[in-house]
Amino acid sequence: PLILGIESSCDETGVAFVRGNTLLTDAVASSVELHARFGGVVPEVASRAHLEAMIPMMSRAAAEAGHSLSDVDAVAVTSGPGLAGALMVGVAAAKAVAWALDKPLYGVNHLAAHVCADVLDHGPLPSPTVALLVSGGHTDLLLVNDIATDVVALGRTIDDAAGEAFDKVARVLGLPYPGGPEIDRLAVDGDPRAIHFPRGLTSRKDLERHRYDFSFSGLKTAVVRYVQEQERDGIPLDLPDIAASFSEAVADVLTRKAIDACQEYGIRNLQIGGGVTANRWLRRMAEERCAAAGIELRVPRIRLCTDNGAMVAALGSQIVQRGLPPSTLGLGTDSSLPVEQVQM
Ligand code: ATP
Ligand code: MG
Ligand code: FE
Figure 1 (cartoon, rainbow, N blue to C red):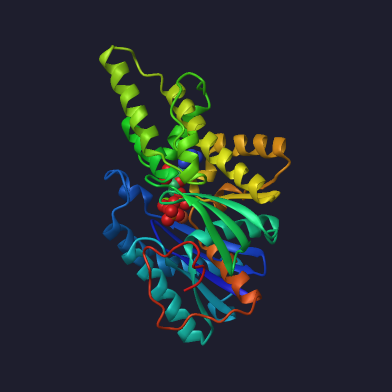
Figure 2: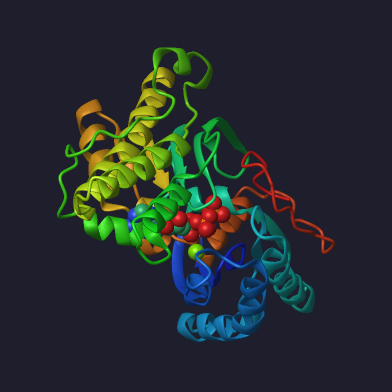
């Protein structure tokens, strides 16, 4: 079956066509530059940009796929979590297409879709797989028995998401928004051992209660304090060293806990997804540590890690392949949809 996927949970308007586990085409428009001067995504601005981009992205994706919308067998759309107004634009568009074509509609979870993007690059996920989801709004460690029906949260961030930490630290360093890619670039020339930043929730006591949880707010505070001390002492900031040491701290905890989970559950497969997966430091550390632990690592190409319609179509396709019932045309949005609820 040919699946149309629509994504609009944050600041990317994504439309894609997927058949089975194969990505045919993927069109993405981002409103990120419109938010840059505010230092973060402005919900009203994002919703408006989705309204303007939705039809053009549908036309572009269809043209590139060599299909017309009427060829579609099912429509999948992100119905949560995300910004309420932004989600509504995608869901309204998806409902309109599904209703007009009389095809089934599937409201799917954006976070499960991030994990599912990998299917387009590496085929079906082995069961079970441990998945680490690291994005702008979420940081979750998941036990994925079946990406369409059985996702269990092992842990999550108790404060900031990893991407949020990158963006906040970038701001402290005077870098433009979004800061993740900026820190990534700077870190290449830095020394990861120059400054020792804290690893949240890794003390013996914390591990008792928060074995697979994460915390990045203490790390952010440590960077702020370090910057203030340097400035007070009149020492110029070595941005590459700070970026590298910070990236090292984030990647260290993320990969350590993910691999611990694989070992505790006896699982030899780790999947990493979400926008922060674009980070070179995290990718390299995950590759090294998984190789050392005998764990097979799956990370999709960077374009599939950040928000896009392809991952939504991929998850819709998995749901269709399993013959699960569609959502109703009364489908709503849930801005805080839990990761375990794969379909709405
Ligand atoms: P969510 O998926 O939780 O709803 P989101 O959709 O906004 O949030 P994504 O698009 O998956 O998040 O990821 C965006 C985040 O990824 C931003 O915080 C951004 O700074 C971060 N990011 C992107 N590229 C990099 C990079 N190379 N290094 C570090 N962080 C990065
Ligand atoms: Mg974005
Ligand atoms: Fe996302």
